[in-house]
Length: 74
Image 1 (cartoon, rainbow, N blue to C red):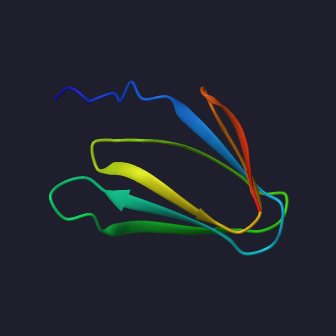
Image 2 (cartoon, rainbow, N blue to C red; image 1 turned 135 degrees about the vertical axis):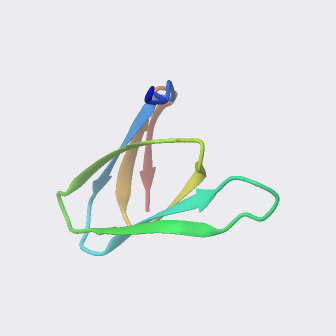
């Protein structure tokens, strides 16, 4: 059995306050929430888009780094 390896870029989210929510959204005809993480200040999450995840929503103060640049969510 061969493992499927995703070639998507990784992105990094660094929480600038306690309680930053990172929410994964599904692909397909109906967009739905499928995963949620809560980060505390200083915590870093490294993630990537997959065959199941087409979008990520970030709530709270955070720095988001991608291959396209860095953004600060206020």
